[in-house]
Length: 412
Image 1 (cartoon, rainbow, N blue to C red):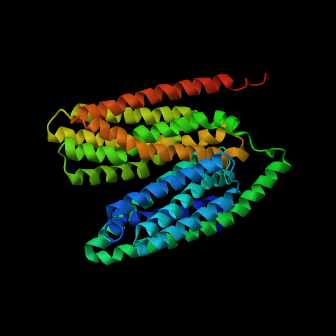
Image 2: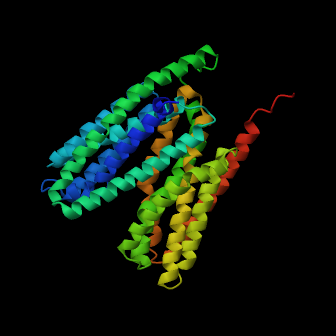
Image 3: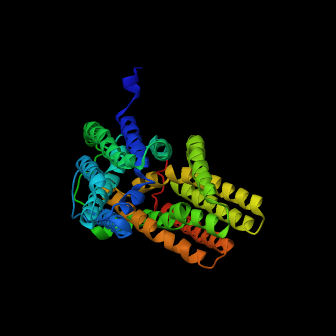
């Protein structure tokens, strides 16, 4: 088989998305630093930029969910990448609050459209049997490339003057264009696959579901998405660094070590975790993910009472368990969401899940900070562990309810 035959449209999509993720990694650590350094922007402009991006992202997700904004998945994804391109190309020239607002809105709208479109597009290019492997591989690629981009940017800023940072934003803008092209090419293959499905009688043409019906179908996944970002992802990104540095006196270098451990574990174990979960319901994978996070929080909390070496060990164990949980989540969540709704409603359902992700990312750090106000690291870790325990129980109840609703197999 030729290389071209093996390199399928979905592979091109993952590779170009990985390139875009690498370029995003270039600006990831420096966006706030760059904006705050501009005389007409400052810290107020930084807050305005992130606020505008978050609100715009959420607004697009809600418009898509409600059926107010109706675009084909490829058109939506391409439009999203072009808005992303415009937003990041504007960043080197942001010199006022107004321009910070414009850039934030463009990036937020672009992200909202692209994220809603990419999952249905990937799903249309794979079979149900390979769905979990493909989504898991995509997640590992995006994690590795984002981290690599951040490392390259850090190395460049060590040897080059600060004036190199604006060029990172230009590189990030240009880096999205191959993904735009890959989406257009993949769209042709997806349409052909859809036509074959319709000829075989497997198409799902029909009017859009009413909003209430869609929410009823997709809300279990949306609620789980909200919970895992409230008490999982946002805590690893915001609360864990704060608690380890301020309450556990570990030093800033430990934060970098935790992030490096996270990426290494994901890249090295994603395939193994996906293989172990094959044949099990997706809700089992989600329960395992949150269960691993719960154990990680418990270990970090227990070790927080002990001397430095034990505290460091506890944090490293937490980072490993959190990464393993991410592996279980990445091969379970989107396949579960896809199984809950008709294919024609997947863009709307995915937009609903993305809106919950945005809310979780925005509100989650406040929960961790509120726990950290106690001044006790164990209170933070055990508090988050309790929240994850409740999520595990809730996902188990959802799985039981879903199994009860499933039609009984036909008699032989």
